[in-house]
Length: 332
Image 1 (cartoon, rainbow, N blue to C red):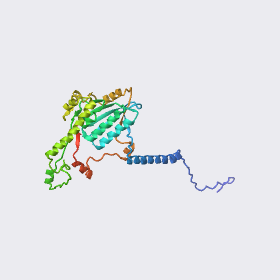
Image 2: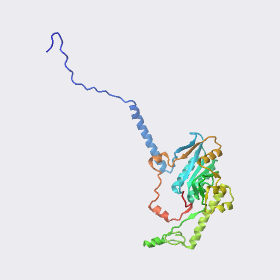
Image 3: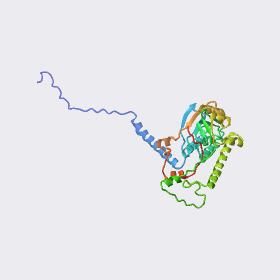
Image 4: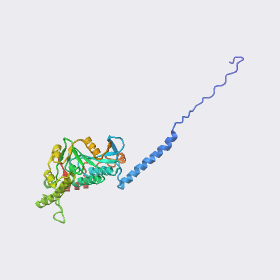
């Protein structure tokens, strides 16, 4: 009931919903820039795939090792493990990138390898010789093991340093011919081989090697041995006869290698880097190494190493094929 002299209260308004629109800052930026970045990224991937399929190598990523953060560079080229297809290709890519980079003034070849195939070691040796022709000093730094083909690739270096516990040497050639005839007889399998000449299946694992074949294979590996000796004599500036006296397949300690003039001095990787810096006449240097993959390859896994054992037709045929090796049969 209304009190006399007072006005009635206004009716209660119906319920209202208040909407507050909140505008995010930078929304237009994301709507514009994110699609552009996505397009650029896709173009980068597409371009990298085209380059890979066309055989054009992509640049390896550089990683900082020591020294200055910019300026003239010393590149550490790493050769690790058995010198087979993948390791050879990685070594060649590193050497070529260092060769073609005008900012790289010297190279340290870091070796931890028992050697490998004759052709693989020789390809690395040749690429290093090409790099040296660009007037870029090369210093070899030996890790735990740098023997046989691992020493072969060190031979052209201006200086060779070995760690005190390095094993090196093993200068010689190895050819192994598996003999599977006894095993095949035990499992009841026989292989009939048809050839167009008496030498076509020389080295076949399915029959014993003949005396004539043994003599012929010796002639083949002797040729590879002669080249090994010449490479050392040329690289170390030693007489052939002096090299032959130590090129008997024997493994040498680091101190023995210094005595036989196969190595200049004892030292670690940082000592080799300092030697390279002196040879290049650099006051300071930006020391880098190369990643195994380029950024694109790392992202997509394009250069992942093959599994160590494959049972495809190519791998099975390889197991039957004699391989001439600059290989030391020890591991550290």
